[in-house]
Image 1 (cartoon, helix red, strand yellow):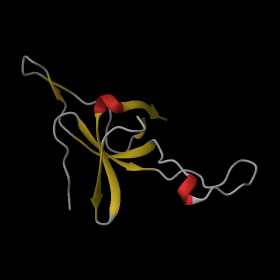
Image 2 (image 1 turned 135 degrees about the horizontal axis):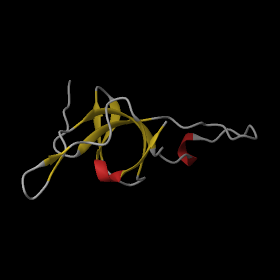
Image 3 (image 1 turned 90 degrees about the horizontal axis):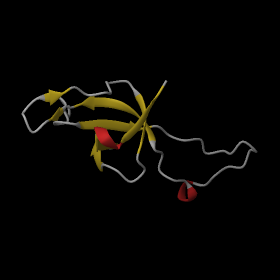
Image 4 (image 1 turned 45 degrees about the vertical axis):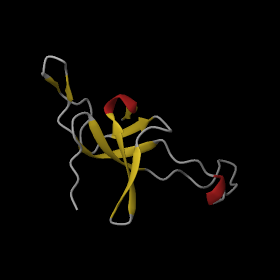
Length: 95
């Protein structure tokens, strides 16, 4: 199934965080927070201004990004969880 986000929306696959601390302590699944880092899988065309002009997206497919922890809508694609978020909820691109 292919999903193409509309307007200024971005489809992101969360990146799994480490389950072990630097000291070697293993964190159980129920104590872990959802990661706020992911990889962009698809992007919309861009934000439309009041004048009708489309502003291009700042992120592209393959970018690793940090996003707001509680932003977006979680969906399932082929049994795997994905997140659709607004471009404005993306905080940074990780290089």
